Length: 162
Image 1 (cartoon, rainbow, N blue to C red):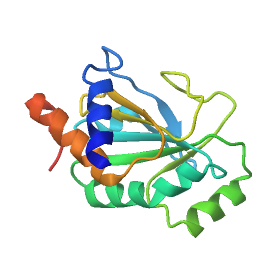
Image 2 (image 1 turned 30 degrees about the vertical axis):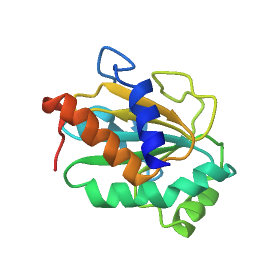
Image 3 (image 1 turned 120 degrees about the vertical axis):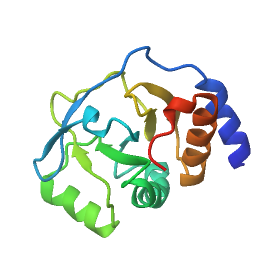
């Protein structure tokens, strides 16, 4: 199944989604502000999700694994919760699910470079800040790693970390 998914992912995303880099300004649950450009040189897995969404819950352990394995070198995960939850409720959910990657809670003016209507929706942003892949549905860490490896093999300057 992973090979089928990977080939579909690669087939749909062989060209960058946008020609130019993107730079969103975000604020995590602790109030820390950051930009996607802070992660230049690494892959960014930008994941839009919700606590009520079964496929989102299914992929959380996979995203945790990818983030924890690669955050110091190859890539990071950033989760954008698409609900207007009370901060304490979201914090409890993050704690209960051992989420180690930054979570950005929904605000009235959520910065985005493209409309997101289904969850989970994940964008892969290359080390130059260019969105090169989009996937709607649950992902695995292996599928993300295989996509990055495949993309980097075709674009040697896009290795990122490892």
